[in-house]
Image (cartoon, rainbow, N blue to C red; front, side, top):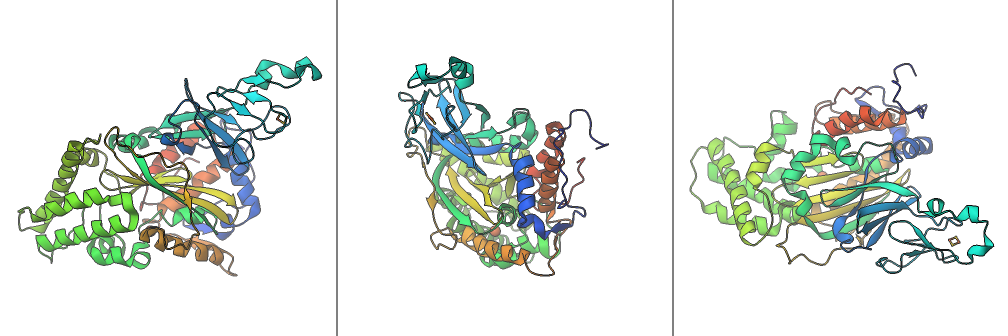
Length: 472
Ligand code: FES
Ligand SMILES: [Fe+2]
């Protein structure tokens, strides 16, 4: 292809499903098997993916299996850091860990033992035992060749990331300065309080896109809209809103603040760690503080006060948290940070909720949520090792994801409806959806990592943002 430079991959694929008009996303991208295979071959095989939270592998020898589209990777904590190996026996290919192999357990002493003929590997991936060596041509048993095949693995922000492409840029180079705001908010110190999973009957992108704009709040989360209508109406109703607290000039300062607090309560009840109960309590204490009468002055002051009190009081309990106001001022974050291709975090004060979506089939995906918060050193709970798997319509999910999940399966059905050719997107508020699709197309077009990384970085803070121009 003429516009490829010498560093571009030779694996460019014909993509009959590509987005041609950025405001129109073809419906077939959400169910067609051929497009699903293009994503698998050209995007999932070359992109960084959150493989596990580090607290699930705290000891040397702890490991977890990460799976993506039939590929299985072992992520293991070794004395030289976290490493990843492809999960297959070098003899006849049986997975040596996970659902089809050993029981979950620390491998420091035993290593990984193939369940078929008992060959063994240590955590570094060296083969340590071959039963009946003399039966084999010794050329087949060279140490280097028997090593487990390694997978790119890096740790950042409390998680291990893997990439199946040996030629990828590092995770930090790929994400660039997009990581700075989460770093400043101390994401690496957070621990999971709970972890839920569900299988949604929808394409993985449909599931993710339910979280890629706030335009759905009015109808999907009416309780949030009702608590602070000015926030949502100014952003979606007449499009005058910006970042920061929205203020209703027709209400007193006190009533404005009470409506902000009502929003915190709903977020706390509806999404746990997003506004943690301990932060809600601190915000409640701040309700009685004397503030100026002008709501335009009082509301931002009150927000600053709550951030300062959360910082002060949680630090006094021994939590290692940054100055929340300083972090929020230096790195303003609009509700959500998206990390291409399939994870995102919602941020409010000191805690976060973290999400990961993985395709299973063209029309099903695995959707996971973690509620993350800080704990004083030495008081961290036992790590949550497995998600609680619930049916997608379970009433046990917090209220906000319950509401989001209610749309996702029916939207998937709509993709097949006769005459529905494409989604039409708002160019100013639903840009992230379009931009994400076009970066996927950039992978399918075989662009180099160096060319893809700037677009990936632009996506991170693109929540509720516009359709962007990419050099892809
Ligand atoms: S397949 Fe693993 S030891 Fe034979
Ligand atoms: Fe939502």
